[in-house]
Length: 185
Image (cartoon, rainbow, N blue to C red; front, top):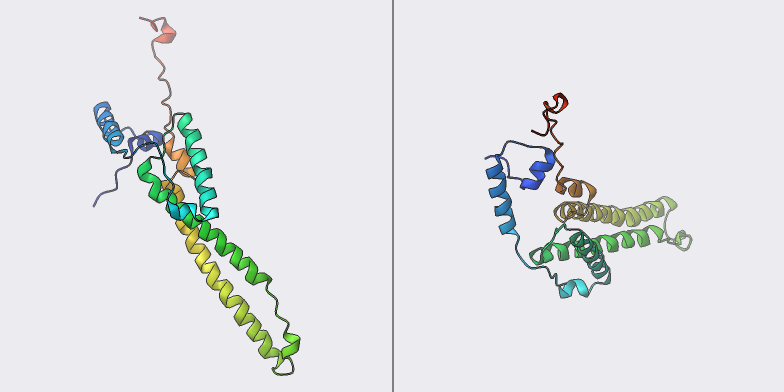
């Protein structure tokens, strides 16, 4: 199996020149034909029902519309599904962080239990009941973060994916005969 094909704009941004002009044009045309969907993005009801996810949706749509006004059409209506999943995952991530913060602030008054249990046992119980859930939440938070990073790459939401999407301009080639007076012939 070979490597996955990359969009022609990314190849140009990386400075790859192994394709002829005709191949580049045919790939550009094929990529343009692959852009599915219209310009209008409709927010799914499950995102509208979640205030955190819906706020993220509106923020992203605003940013995408600004990019579109500058001539960069990054997202189409066929991408609404992954955008909605990103917004819901972001909401779940924020809720997990809030839950972890609440658990870490939780304090138990063990003085009332000292007459029934040994102090060492109480310290062990405190550690078990406090750090067990925190560790589980940390694991869930890390998984959500990994999901978000992967989706950010696809949706051009992180700096590296934005840079990869901007094609580099070819430097102008100097005419070797220009300094000898033959530049405009």
